[in-house]
Each structure stands twice: as C-alpha cells, then as structure tokens.
Length: 158
Image (cartoon, rainbow, N blue to C red):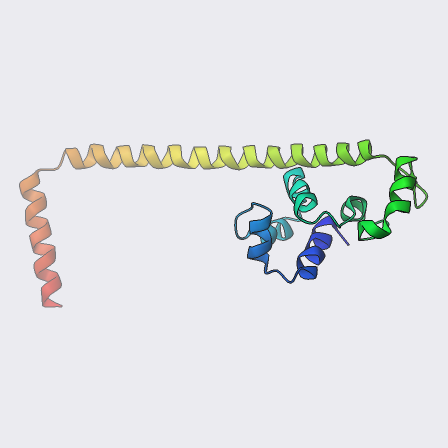
C-alpha cells in the first residue's frame, strides 16, 4: 500500500468525498486523481495538513505503512523509530525527510519542465498571432467588407 493509498484510507475513514478531502488539504479538485494518474507522492505540505487536521493518525504509518495506523496504538512504534530500528529496518526520521526532499525536488523538476513547455507554447502562439496581425494589416478594408457581405449573403441562401 502506498502513501497515497493510505491517505485515501484516511479520507474513507472520515467518509469524505475526494473533493472535500482535497479542500481540507488546501488542494484543488482533481489533485488526488492527478497524483494517482502520475504515480506521484503528495508533497510535504499535504502531510503537514494531514497532521494538522487528523492528528490521531501515526505519521510513521502514513509514510511507511509500518506500525499502527492510529497514534493511540503507535507509542511503541514511535519509540522503536526513535531508536533507529523499526520492523528490522534501520532508518530514521532524517531518512524519511531526505526521501521526501528528493521527491519534492523531482516534483519541482517536473513542474519546471511543464512550465517551460507551457512558456514555449505561449511564445509560439504569440508569434503566430503576430503573423496574423501583419497579414490583416495589409488587407484593404473595403475588400474585406465585400467578402463579409458576400459570405453573409451566401449563408442566408442555405
């Protein structure tokens, strides 16, 4: 089960629609679907919102799937984690933080890439519009008016 699937479980525990849950997370509608579609991980801001709004959930369980889902049952899990061992795995909160940091950097790279594609597309569109404007500035207004009248007349006949 992934982090995203565990967040879905939290949403289902609270009987919220995805759009309602996204609102709690301060995200736009479709955010969770996009994460699933792109096999992405939620950002640290989402994890912070989860912890603020649903403090009863165990962060270790959310991030790794290890330990108890609810904090009331998670004290032992947290003690093991603080000692650097959890279910036979050696890791610390710093490791989790580093993983999240790497994921955020990857996401930022993807966002920058998408921004560059969007920027290039807008630039090309503006160049094309400039060409259209150059072309239309060379047209004789009287000729254009006659063509428009002719098209309107032809349209009436149909």
